[in-house]
Amino acid sequence: MHNISFLQNENLPSFAQFCISDSRYEDLRTHFTKKTYRAGECVQSEGDTITHFGIVVSGILKAVSYSRDGEELCNAYFEEEDVFPEFLYLTGNRHYTYLLYVEKRAEVLWIPIFLLEEMLSADAGLVSALLCYV
Image (tube, rainbow, N blue to C red; front, side, top):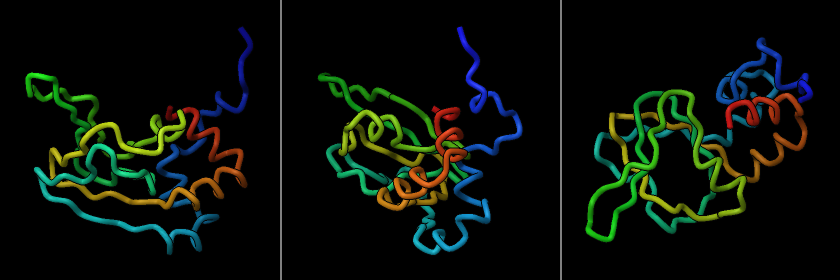
């Protein structure tokens, strides 16, 4: 197996840190939206179109679906510096396949998809950080 050098850089900021605080994105951050949600709030519904990537700044979100019997199935938790819905979007799905609830009061930074795609196209370091996160 070969080492992939750009994935081995321990000094590389996390994907969330790149987006939240890297000075190269200062101008673009004016297009980001930060929202606060209370516990129990539904942030996204199944079938909603994916228009933004979310980064959890604080709190906890929970991806939920339901069994045929109506039992809640927790698909994932998203905590500080977690990103969503990266797997859905990167695999070509453009709609949420789960309900996204706030488990613990949360603040989320929303980045428009078109802007994130522009950022990724222009910055190999950001792509590396996203790959390391995934």
